[in-house]
Length: 203
Image: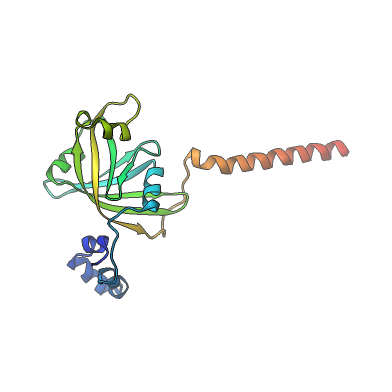
């Protein structure tokens, strides 16, 4: 069985492009019977997803147009329910409901979650099932805390995932991620100021 992501993503037209561009041999191994898996989240994927404060989610409309939306929250807002399923609380936003409408047409989505400081990127394919928050109190407790208005719970049954190449991922830091590095610099600055004051006193 091929790797799950290759079976989904490497369509005949994609393979034709790989052949024309000289990468078919390298990627052909992902479609061989020697390679399998890539459809069950392991500890690395679960840890990565639950540490994220956002991801990009693509859906497709009835007219065939893709739509990408950023979903964000405090780290941990994505819950890994099991090796096949993730979920998050869908809060009230600008009330355009583009993603909600698209997902009513087709539940298929593609996600990209990025760890910018460490230049890591995880791509996921899956199928969405919307859950009424009032219909599943246990699931609601896992994905929601606080007082924000939650309109639905989005569960995604993972069909495939792929750890993407780190090339071209810029290194970016949130204030929280940057704080340990800043504290090292502050400590060094304090040491230098103390040393400078001592040298002035000696002179």
